[in-house]
Amino acid sequence: MLGKLKIKYIQSLGQKKLRDEEGLFIAEGPKILQELLTSAKKNIVAVYGIEEWIQANEATIGNIETVIVTDDELAKISQLSTPNKALAIIKKFDNSATPDLKGKVSLALDTIQDPGNLGTIIRIADWFGVTNIICSTDCADIYNSKVVQATMGSIARVNVQYVDLAAWLASKKDIRIYATALEGQDVATMKKLEEGIIVFGNESKGISEEVLQLVNVKITIPKKGNAESLNAAVAAGIVLAVLS
Image (cartoon, rainbow, N blue to C red; front, side):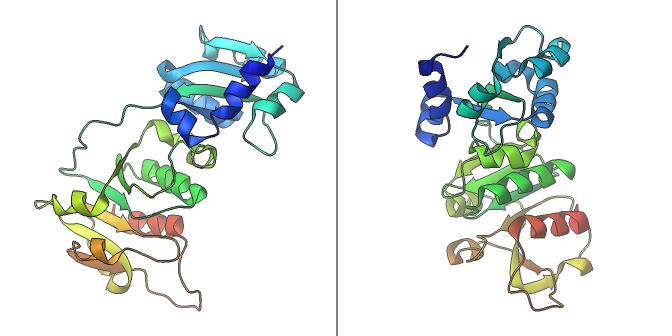
């Protein structure tokens, strides 16, 4: 049985301030936990799950601290509206190393504030073998529970860093910078990229003027219908499918 203090502590990790202080975050659900138990087992501090799930996954969990909880207890510690069998407390990943951009396609995100979009972009990047994502400091927090859920485990395989994006891009004199915009070169007419940084902007406002001034090439996905804009994650998927 979980005590009130433990329940309160786990609940507190839903707040960014406390996640930052503790260096921990929460991941939930069988699919994500299976991914993280495979690719980031050393970062998992503890697993909380209903008895049926714990017993079925004992071999994979190994010697990680494991706590069997009731459905009611899981509902109290879960960040989800509908809790799903298991939850893990995980050490944040060390993404402090300077990213190696040579010979790679990397992404830069300017004020992507929707957690679902950010998580989905991380998952898309992982699908296309993109290992570096550089975020402006006002992007959603990578360890927000909605971001973590949307990555479906890709959070463990993609290096995500937060920087002053304009200053960071300005320092990249030896690598070409591409940016998605309403007006630009049709992405379908471009050759595959062997190296470069692709910038994606805010869901409603696009890329800031300060960042746009640092771009070498503007690219676009031509519009045929009447939608005002594309979802940032959808745009990332299309661009990477064409260029990577």
